[in-house]
Length: 136
Image (tube, rainbow, N blue to C red; front, side, top):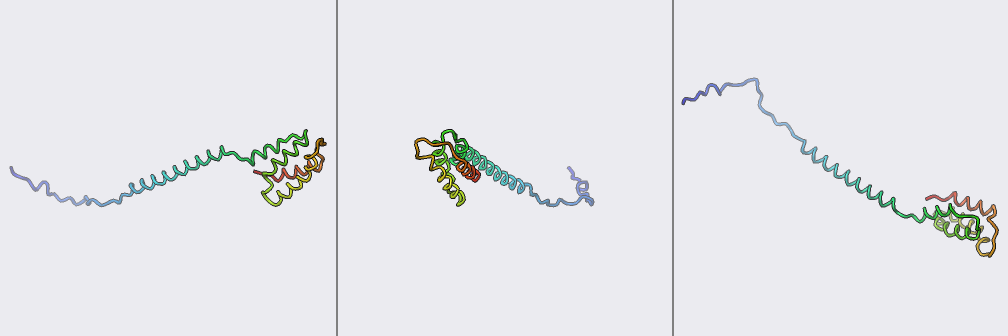
């Protein structure tokens, strides 16, 4: 068999040789996966923190709720309840402490007697001023 080399040796002038194209898709994939894992971890952390804080019991919130719900029909019991619940907020600031002491002075007349009258206007005003300072 005779070989015909002239058919395969035709020079091609219009076809250029292959060139190297830089390929970055693997790097893009790695960076995307790392960023995705970080974002997913932060999302899980935030969700766990939200769930923990949602169910967390706050004594200050409970005392503020109970302080707002105090019944004034029995002044003696109300004076004791107000004193007990208001203690939670007395050390918040100097203003809170002064208002608490003033409220305490007004409530003293209702605590240690067998029969007491209903709250006077000064005590009600003092309580309203103290309640206006409270926030949780």
